[in-house]
Structures are given as C-alpha cells and as structure tokens.
Image (cartoon, rainbow, N blue to C red; front, side, top):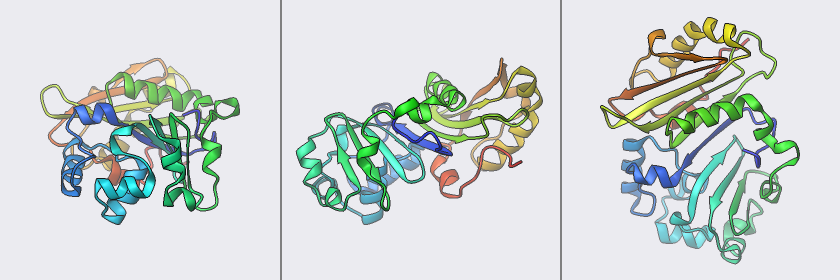
Amino acid sequence: MGHLPADSRVAYGTDLIQARDAGYTDDGALEELGDSQAATGAIPDALTAQFRYAQLLSADRFTAKTGVKPDQIDCSLSNVGSSVLSGSFDVAEVEGSSVADSGNLAATDEVVALTQGNHDPKALLEVRKNEGLAGNDDAKAVLESLRDAKSYSVLIDVGNPKAEKRARAAGLGVAEGKDQDRALVVAWQFADGDAAKAGRSAMVDRINAVVKGTTSISADDLVVDGSMVTATLDSRKAPDLQRILSQSSSLIDAD
C-alpha cells in the first residue's frame, strides 16, 4: 500500500502465492488461466490482465513482451491507473522489454511497477513519503482485516476519512471456505463503534447488491468489533470481485 498514491480511491489485488495454493493457475494455457480465475475468484495481476488476457498471449510470449515470468510474481496491488507487483525479478529483462520501452514499466529486484498514460512507473518503485495509501489508517485496517481472514484477493473502496456515519473504508475478499470451496470476506471501517452498529443495515443492502447471484448476507452475519464490522460467509461459488471492479460498483453509499 505504501507504493500507491495516498489519494487512491480504490485498491485491489491478489496474493498470488496463496491464490495458486487455492487453485489459481497463471503459468499455463489461457484456457486454464480463465477457468481457474473463475473457479477461485482471484483477481489477475495487472500485467497478466493487460497483456495475457487482453492480448491473448501464451506464457512464453507474455514473458518475452514484459520480461516477467508468471511465477516470479508473488503479490499484486493496484489502483485505477497504477500497479505494483512484488516478487523476484530480473531488472535487465524487464527494462529491456517492449513494454518498458513504452515508458509504462519499471523494476527493481523485488518490485515491478506498471502505469497507464504518461505516469512514470519509477515513482511507484519505492515507498512514498507519508507512506502513500498505507498512511490511510482506515484503508490499511480494512486490508489487514481481509488478510487476517485469509483473503487471497481483495477489493477496497477508500471513503471520506472524516465521515461520521458512512464507512471510511470498505472491502471485500475471497478466501477458501470451510463448508464450501470459497468464502466471501467482508470488512467495513467506521469512525467509531456507534457508527459501526448504525451502519450495518446499509452494509447488508450494499453487499447484497454487489454480490447478487453469489451469496447473500444478513445483519446476523456481521460481527462488530469497535469501529470495524466484519463477516466471513461460505459461498457456493467464488465471489466475482473482478466484475464488481469492472462495473465500478461502489461499496460505500454516496453522500
């Protein structure tokens, strides 16, 4: 989170190591990649989404174009226009790639940064002053809650840090289930305990609207712990965070 700008309004990504253990496949044929993404609900890393999915590349052609092998990527986190991938990379291979020549890809031994448009990827390679998005305590708390609940893919909306009634940050995650294959993980951060208790009804309505067709949630499923409201629900199929993201479905009700 520290590599992304502090003013990011959304963050999404995947722990690829954990997702692979859960059945996600990103180094095989495109059909395997697509099938495993649907089965696990894992959000593909930004390089894979932009170049393998969008350009229908094989794993070898993907590596030739980007300088990155799929199994070199451990984790990915993005906002709307920027992405940071952690892992173990060959800087010379990445910087000698055609994507890097376009000015939108840069690397260190441990970080690859991808941007769109005229944004400099090198600005993402180091942790930002004031910790970037990690300096937002509410968004950070949501991410930590989702990860503590074993989410391997996450989608976080960053709200108004001064909100008194609505959530200051809200997130959904996908994890392996206990009684079924997958689980939906929920984390909403409010200003205080009173706001958290009062916000449960709006939470239920919003969550059910964005995950319709996958599972449903009620107020009884929610756990209030101070200013945080959480839940973990087994699901008959993997929640499709990618669809929610592509439809720009906000997790926090507008003012």
